[in-house]
Amino acid sequence: MFTTRQIIEQYTYTDGTHTPGTDSYITFTRNAWLTDTATGEERPPETVTAPLSATGALDVTVTTTDDPTTSPPGARYTVTEMIRGAPARSYAIAVTAGVGPLVLGLIAPLT
Image (tube, rainbow, N blue to C red; front, side):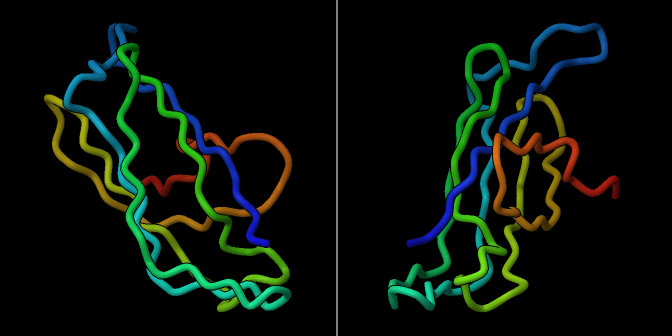
């Protein structure tokens, strides 16, 4: 059975106001097929689209990429942030298994 993990984030402007959720979303595109070596279950590459809430909050759950029974090791997600009024930004992340949600801003690269 595949492990999943919640990813959260709060998007705000410099003045402290929330980014508009309308028309703003984040996509998570996994780069590889995943196989659960304990059950044989497979998951093809997929894109999960997570719209932001009206207050600019992200809350999405995706399959982890480092579970001990998940193959191949090293799978990644390409994250694309589409925030209304801002240029799109894309980068790759690993979604590690663990307890509690991952905060996207703490695992996103700075470049």
